[in-house]
Image (cartoon, rainbow, N blue to C red; front, side, top):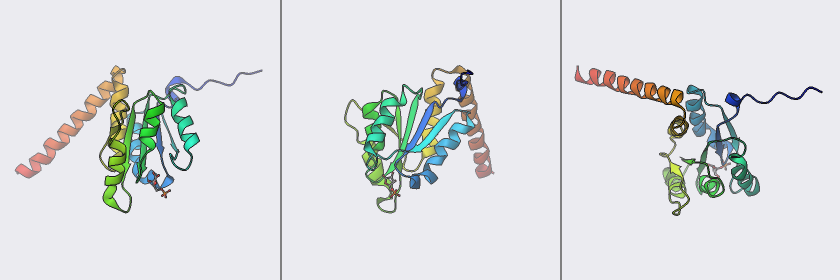
Length: 171
Ligand code: RP5
């Protein structure tokens, strides 16, 4: 019998992107795009803290064992997903406050950032899923010199672009 081939280590997801609803995806896909820019394998799914709590806890409990190294969790309104995941996983959790129709995302931001001592969630700005992706890259780069070199090059490109734009202002 032929054994099924194992998934090659570099194609196994290292980052899990989860969100409370598919309606969060237009915001959250920017995290996926940032990871793609750095060739980081990731998975993305809807895991609602309120509509599927058992599955949500299961996802958090199993994430590290499945090989994930960082979780990016986005939610809007009563945005409990990042904090609840952080309560059941030892992995770093990055929360993305998704802005909804009312309150400009302030409710999402405060729900995510006001965690009790001992259970940290790294929150990015309202709607800024790109920064969540880039922060995940930096976390992974701490133990990956090649990835760190790419992040350094990315930062140099940001600096060059800012210089270039400044030139247009100065002239
Ligand atoms: C939150 O409720 C989700 O993260 C989403 O931001 C919000 C609205 O969800 P839908 O009603 O659009 O599914 O749990």
